[in-house]
Length: 100
Image (tube, rainbow, N blue to C red; front, side, top):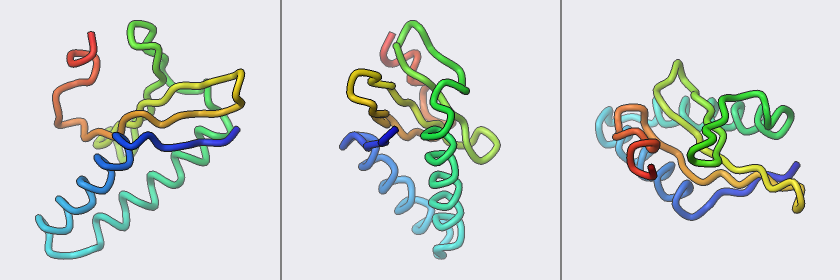
């Protein structure tokens, strides 16, 4: 299946990378986030149903980097597509609370 990023997910991903670059003064941690996100995306493409499904939101939730970051996505079977809707830090208010 093809995976596409929503504007929201893309923006929050880039903001996260910027934050960690500014915070650490180095690209080392942002690079690690990129690498782990790329690995997670490949896993999602291969096994889209293998992670927790949040029925109340209609989204799948994948944790990366020992739960530090969360990817929320929707599977659109009819289009053979996965849409990554949210990229969030686990330190942020849970998406389940915001969208419920």
